[in-house]
Amino acid sequence: MNDSDSYSHDGHRQRLRERFLRSGISALSDYEVIELMLTLCIPRIDVKPIAKDLIKAFGNLRGILDADREKLVKVKGIGDSAAAYISLIKSLIILYHMEELEIEQVEIPTIDKLIKFFKSKISSEPLEVVEMVCLDSNLKIVPNGSVRICEGSVNCARADIRKIIETAIRLGASSIAIAHNHPSGDPHPSTDDITFTKRLSDACRPINLSLIEHIVVGRNSCYSFRRAGEFDVLYDESLPPSRRGCGRKKSAADGRKVAEDGTDII
Image 1 (cartoon, rainbow, N blue to C red):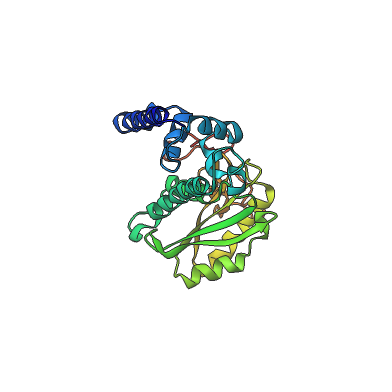
Image 2 (image 1 turned 90 degrees about the vertical axis):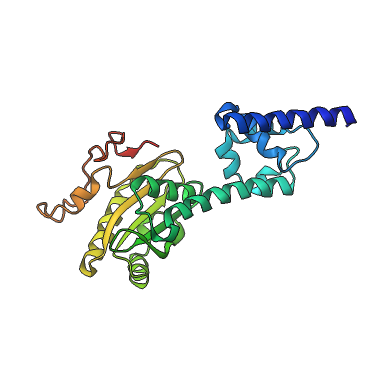
């Protein structure tokens, strides 16, 4: 590469940065967002072809961030340093959502925040995992209140309810919210998921521990048991025990759009 090529690439990089700083990320095309990211970790060469190759290999920015190092370095121009930088970006996104949810026990976690938090942590996991958040009597996050209960299970029904209860007691929780992912990408709960939620709810009641939410995380969307109206059935004492937890679909009370099947549109 001669000096004029280097000057041309440097000028393009500067113009790309200036456009981002002036107009925000919405002013950039998909490959330009990736190109801008690559300019921060790959010096002195034209990274536009690399950005386009990454999109071709992984589909979009989310696919690139979800890719592991072994797959990233197979793309021409992506070395260990660039792969590590891309992984760092994904880790920072997760950390941001964790701190947003857990910051100094100040903020009450809305369903939207719980969805963002759980989605950022487990949506790209290749195996099923179960996460829990513990809250105090004011519905604020307790210290160290985000806990991974299990990972690698075939399905959510195998999660250890005793471990969930013992963890909640140890952390002094008054209520809990749980989430698990569906590696298939489909967030709709299975019969086992609904049965597990009822069993967990039943186990919480004798110790005055409230299960306030169960979120199923798919690839691009999430299912909220509370928004779908499942919890109305779980806690409806007028129904016989055999009917509780069977599920009843309704719109979210806060007016957000929810699909007829209860899938949260985010």
